[in-house]
Image (cartoon, rainbow, N blue to C red):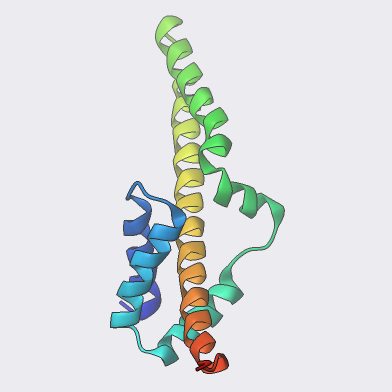
Length: 139
């Protein structure tokens, strides 16, 4: 597993924690700073910048993945309800399709959010390493 995949997995682990985005970035910054050399950080950042989608649909899914998936969960529930109440096995197709779409939308949004977190962290690391060189102490 390369550094890119490892960093995405670390970001996904941080997303599972209930904390602010700033705290997630801070914890991830410490992990990345200790385990990834600066050259590889730049490579991962370039890869992320090239890979991150810029279309509005992807941005909506990244920011509101649960809201986007909610109608599909509703379709799945409605298919289940109608399939059971009317004893129509065909209605169960809507259940399976709705669950599959909702699950994949949420998974896609989760990956996009993790990538965005890694990108924010790498940009913060780069800004902090550049900042001390720019500022001279005034004494």
